Amino acid sequence: MSSDLVIVYHRQPYEEVEENGKIVFRENSSPNGIVPTLKSFFGTVDHGSWVAWKLAEDTSNPGFDRVVKISDSYGDYTVSRLPLTAEQVRGFYHVTSKEAFWPILHNFRERYNYDPVDWPNFRAVNRAFAEAAAAEAAPGAVVWVHDYNLWLVPGYLREMRPDVRISFFHHTPFPAADMFNVLPWRKEIVESLLSCDVVGFHIPRYASNFVSVARSLFDVDDIERVRVDDDFISEDTGLTERTVPVVVVHNGRRVNISTAGVGVDVDYIRKMAALPETDKHVREIRAEMDGQQLILSVGRTDYTKGGVEQLESFGRLLEANPDLWGKVRLMHVSVSANRSMAAYAEIQDAIEQTAGRINGRFGSFDWTPITLISRAVPFAELVAYYRAADVAWITPLADGMNLVCKEFVAAREDEDGVLVLSEFAGAAVGLGSAVSTNPYSHRSMDRAILLALRMERNERQTRMRHLRKVVAKYDIRAWGEAQQQAFALAGKATTSGAD
Image (cartoon, rainbow, N blue to C red; front, side, top):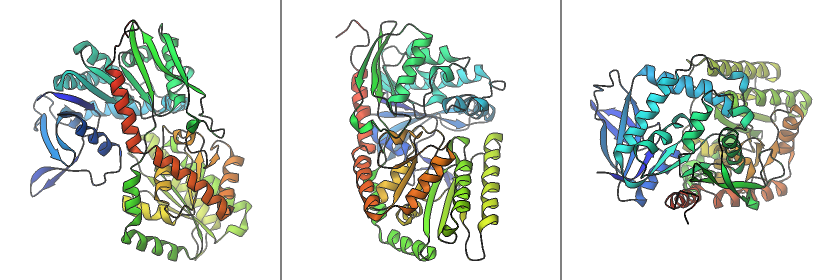
């Protein structure tokens, strides 16, 4: 059965596990996250499809069904699974996406690695995704493509199926032209994106950067701009824009530019926070802290997340403030990435060495300044720590959005706690009541965390109340509504001369 909505995303929309010798598709263990959110859109159409990849030794005889039918709480939908070899995945994802694209997207030019890129492999994988989407899409269907590792899908799909409406959402930052144009494949990438009906970004800055890149490479006309909503103009972040492009025209095609930051499932987080077992865990954490202040930092092991810089700031804090010894602890959760990738192994080693050095310098028999956790923490446990923490310290060097800070705010039913947030996280443009910090500045980082630790209760609550209003207003449902509006725009005339 052809589909009215086809979602193209590299991950499969379920957990594939073996039970009693059989492979079963288990619904995601937590409804909080991007995959469950995307699946919720299947409830808006008669039939939906999802396109993802699956590892296979032999792509011509993969040993699994290419197309499977799924029935879960989100409805009935089809999953088209592309068989890719380990070498194809390595070239497409681990090398091209992570070693070439990722550093450029996050403005780390010095980490960009062009030499090992197999561009024909990246093209072939993207074309395979486009072919699968074309096979699944009904006439006039919406095909919703997600993220930078599928940049070429829209261009191939437009050639195969000119009738479909193509929407693309970019989950990472999008850099300015001086950075993006380092990529030797820049024209091919941007030309593909300009074949979309809608290109979506988290915040206005990324949309503006994309249009600037497009104008540097192609004749792009009739750029329509509007003023950014006051909710997303913050004086304390380097990512604020006053106006944002909403339409460009390329080769007679109208391309709508959408900006809407992904939110969190506020209702779900509040329910988790209110559970009796969560209350019990919070009391246990606070009892174990024995009056010490708890700083919580949660992120992935990635050079963009600023983990080492944050730990070094904590060390400087203790060095300059001996009165804090024995009175504050940092729980630093840095989920270990693929150690087979040299860049991530290097960062993990640096985090462990820095934490060890600080603990050795300042720790005692009854006080360990830093608790370093390198495993994924179950979400229920994490919510308890959100509630128990005095400060959430979220300071990436660059981040497309960052949902951890929003989860922390959503969990704080007591309207207490302080959020210290990097001004270079996309979330910062809407969370102006956070304590903003520049992770590239020692003085800014050290001052922000000290301010948070010493903030009076009245100010903490005033800031938190405002943060909670913003996070609730722009939750995951609001993002979904914005995407539906974008799909509606995709259904309108796509040429500059049409009404």
